[in-house]
Image (cartoon, rainbow over the protein chains, first blue to last red):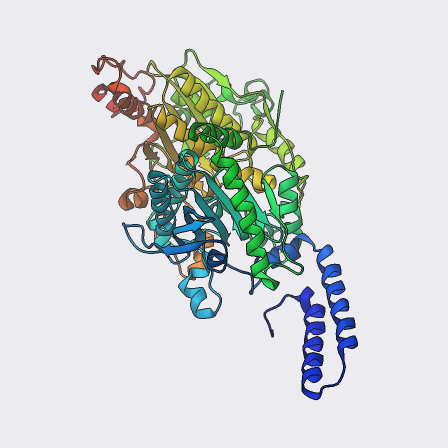
Length: 319
Length: 310
């Protein structure tokens, strides 16, 4: 744990280092340090709680992009079984910033699709930092249409800074790829459950985010533009990202209050990366229960409900 | 008074005749070729430079006035007003930006919707207004677009949308992003109902509007040399750290790459869209096309293809 933590995690990391040291000493010299260790453990938990009880929106944004945050492929084996990744859009390439495939959840066959970021430099480049090109969205569309043909519910996991703004992506129709997914997802007859697990970066996130339920992990964000992008356009300075993060209302809690998402999934103390197993367990419980609810509706009821939910999105007045 | 001036709200109209012989704005300089143009003539040519064919910006209202038949237009969704759900404030408050935009444009938000006819073919048309906060799509724009979709569904008409927008309206946060999903879902309904949607992309159309309704036309049409893309050129330049080639993300580039069906000169849009829509709607009834009415209002255009339409 050298640079893999955030500024505000520093005091926690220091306490944990001290604790680890004490434990080492305790086991090697057979000194009875239990009391001291217990005291430190309590202090550590207390510190985590005090730091995390008052996170600013900017700190939540940093948590959403935490270098140790679990990604889609970290959750898949913990939530699903029998996963088999499927590749390619059948037109141009296989985009590594989006993964997808067949799997089972709670004994039920399904399709899983999610953005995928890389952990180390090499993998980050391989995954293009989780920024899909059109072929990624078209792969997702192919898999979703397949799921629709075979009556398989779809689970999507959102974690992207945004769709990739590159020359090739534009040439191959980035706009159309995103737009087409929005149109298609609105009308698929199978249940679709979308969960933001990290960064929900604008259209690039929404392109696998239209469905019957939208969930967010507690320290994930979902926004029309990144705080940095908003700062440089509206505040004329990228340094104002912290302020922009507050203004955009991008946290799970705020979005839930606005009625824009369905559920906020509490993260383990100190964030999902401190206990991915527990996080995955909570995630799975919610997904299974939401699927049960959606299963009780007929296809046309579900489609109508999905459409009505989309139509209600907006904040306006009528004169 | 020209049709264009009649459309302008009175508070920004220049009542030049009374106090001065030569009112301001009688001459306009073309930004592309720098030709000095006589304003009334330019307006007759729908703000297309007669010297170099440069297509200048049109407001949403002027766009629909130029596009729809004069008779029987009904404006829809006028009662919708923007709000400030986030109490958003950057260098200015969103509320103040809205009031300023409403004052300067005379519009309540960045989209105008009308039901009417195109050379007697009944349809519903929407037009973005780039002058209203960069044509950005917030909740009112999304809802007005849906009013247009619902009008088309109810009357079993085609829908045409003229896009010009920088994308989603940041000041409404995720509400604006969700308008992409909302409008796209509406277009899915249009497709299911077997009703055509023609998207006309005008300069500039980027971001969330391009990545939703803009690219979802059964037929995508663009005006010449319009900037159309997902990411803006500056963002791409910063990402790839190289200069973009000339013509990148322009209409001609999109045609070449297969993103749009055709490029149409604004002065020929009425005739061309009538041709396309009457053919698309031609599969109904007995499948026989009826004699199409002849284009009348762009007599100013020398090579109108109107006589080739039906």
